[in-house]
Image (cartoon, rainbow over all chains, first blue to last red; front, side, top):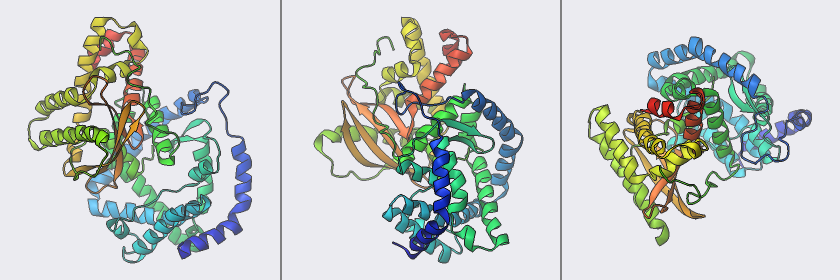
Length: 259
Length: 198
């Protein structure tokens, strides 16, 4: 395991365990579906308020985020846009490693530590994804995922202003992840906001870059709320390895007569 | 907003059949070979359409033909219509099937340009219940690789794909949600939904 991972573990022990304990209490309050709920189905008891937030998000997107994102992608050259994304993602890596460690994912912690070392040095402070060129891709890790590994249930589906789709478990994870990145404790104050800025720029840039995809969900589907919810939950569960997507209803069982 | 990470977003973009050349065949068990062959052939045909340089409208026609040839279209249409299919008349079912093929070809065909220069590599094939799961990795220029999975069955007597997942997102389920919402929005009127699909 990388040196970084070791440092991370220490920091985690000292700083995070009280926090995690507090969080466990919070998460214990996660809404759980009643009996008769099929695992893998959508659990959305807050649909009414979620839909209101969804409409707010669409308005924010239409009036502000989409135009800014599209302009950003148009104005900023592709190489620079990529570098902003790489830079932000590189700075987030130590936090990912912490979560890899908390999940007992030794390989993930090692690969991500190597990525961080390569990209921070050969990749000019993370502006270039040298590690990716060597085939060392990022192994995802966030605290919501850690909670999944620890056996915490998904909880209800939630949509948040600006952040968009989430679940109770994933949003609890996001809050903890504000503290899981060791760089947040090491970097001096003005410098660490560069990372935050790069992160925001990269999110806004992605809105422009993937405009056609996001537009098809938000503006071209008959019910954008359900579509966004389906995309988010399926993709998130796939990333977590939760449930087998191939567990289809048997194609031989469906009545296709007349179609 | 709807913070699609780069990987997620590429996955979503991948919600087309993808324009890729297929990597050299790997050693596979004999009973898996035909499922892989189908996906290879499908990908090859799509590549050819994109390379043809035809007009967008001509390409939609070609995509529709490929979808009908390689896809289990009656299953896909029946699944997409869901419970509403039970009250649909024979002619509504037939009209829906046809309109749905056009809709799929247009919806996904309009995104195929994003895949020019990319490729799809078959990673593994495994039997699941009565069908096969063909896992592939999509490599697009300037994007992180992502997973595209095809489900193949011989329900119709021939090997055809009947579903596809892009980074876990289920094409059939997505279309069932969409068709259901379209019918709801039109006060349960199936004919109106069919008319608007075209």
